[in-house]
View 1 (cartoon, rainbow, N blue to C red):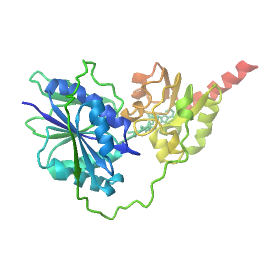
View 2: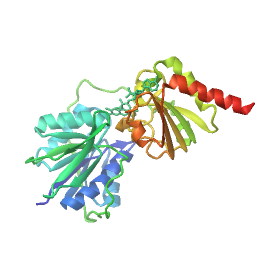
View 3: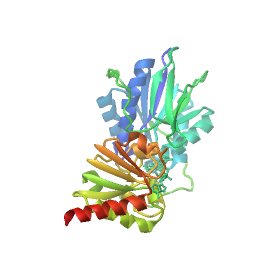
Amino acid sequence: MQKNMLLIGETIENKLSKSSFDLITFIRDIAIINLAKTIMIIPGKDVRTVSEKINQKEGIDTLALEHDSLMYPNPLLLAKALISVISKKLPAYICLSHNMLNCQIAGILAHHLSVPCISAVESFSESDDGDIIFRRSIFNGKLKAEIKPQHIETVIITIISNIPSNPSPIKEFDNRAKVMIEKVYAQENNFIPINIKKREDNDRSLEEAEVIVSAGKGIGKAENISLIQDTASIFNHSTIGASRVVCDLGWLPYSKQIGETGKKVNPQLYLACGISGSTQHLAGIKDAKMIIAINSDPQAVIFNIAQYGIIEDLKTFLPILIKKYQESLK
Ligand SMILES: Cc1cc2nc3c(=O)[nH]c(=O)nc-3n(C[C@H](O)[C@H](O)[C@H](O)COP(=O)(O)OP(=O)(O)OC[C@H]3O[C@@H](n4cnc5c(N)ncnc54)[C@H](O)[C@@H]3O)c2cc1C
C-alpha cells in the first residue's frame, strides 16, 4: 500500500532552509522503499512563491500554509496550524528536520495527534518485511538504537540534517506535482515577538579557517579559553570554535558554536579539546579533513571519528604543545 509522507519545511527570509532541502534528500531514499507520495507543507507568511519554487525544483506537492503570525518561530502556533490540516488525513510519516523549534513542534503534534515520535534520526534501512527501520544515537552517541514502528499508522520523525543518506539511485518525484495554498486560522497567543534581528556577531572566521582549535566543556572554566586561543595562535589561518555547552555557559559567543545548530565547518585540521563527541557536535565537523581529539576519557565518542587521539588532561597537554612549538622557533 502506498504510504504518504508529509514533510514540514522551514523558511528563512522567504527561502527554504538548507535543513529542509536536506530533508527532501533524505526522504527521496525512503520514497524508493515505500513508493510514497510526498507532500511538503511550508508554513509562514507569504510562502506561496517559495512553495511554487520547491514544487518546480523538487517535483513534490507543496502546500503553502499561510498566516501572518506563522512568520515567527512560535512552536505552539505552528503546531496548531499544522494540526488543522494534518488531522484531516494522517500520513504514514510526518518528517521534520531536527532542531530545537522542530523538536518542540514534533512533541506538540505527537501529543495532539496521539502518535509516536522518533527524534534525531540519522539513517534508515529496509527490514525483511519491507518496513523501515530508523537509526539514532543514544547515550550521548555511545550506542546506536534501531527503531521499527510496529502496527502504527502514523509516526513523526525528526531527521538530523547533514547526515549522508543511504547511497541509492535518486528517485525523481512526479513532475506533475501540485502546489496548494491554504489560509489557516492561527489564533494569537501571548508569545508575540516584538522584533527579529539578524545576529551582528556573525563571525565568518570559522568557515574560512584552515585550523580550528575547539573548546568543549572539558576546558573546565571560562579562564581556560586563553589556553585554546594560545594553541590556535601557533597555527596559520586558525581560529577558535566551541561546543554548544561552552556557548550556553557564556564562555564564548554563539557565533563560535559548531554543530547541528551551529556552524558546519571543513578545516584542514580540527583540534577538539575536551569535547565528548555528541551527534549534534559531530554533525558540524564531519567535513574536517583531519580531526585530532584531546580528552581525558579513553571511552570518549570523539575518539571514534578522530584520526589521532590524545588521552590526557588538556591543561597538561596544551601547555606542553605550545612550549614545544615556541622552542622549535629558537
Ligand atoms: C537539539 C539539540 C541541538 C544541539 N546542537 C548542538 C550543536 O550544534 N553543537 C554542540 O556542540 N552541541 C549541540 N547540542 C548539545 C550536545 O548534545 C552536547 O550536549 C554537547 O555537544 C556536549 O558538549 P561538550 O562535548 O563540550 O561537553 P560534554 O559532553 O560534557 O563533554 C566534555 C568532555 O570533556 C572531557 N574532559 C573533561 N575534563 C577534561 C580535561 N581536563 N581534559 C581533557 N578532556 C576533559 C570529558 O571526558 C568529556 O568527554 C545540541 C543538543 C540538542 C538537544
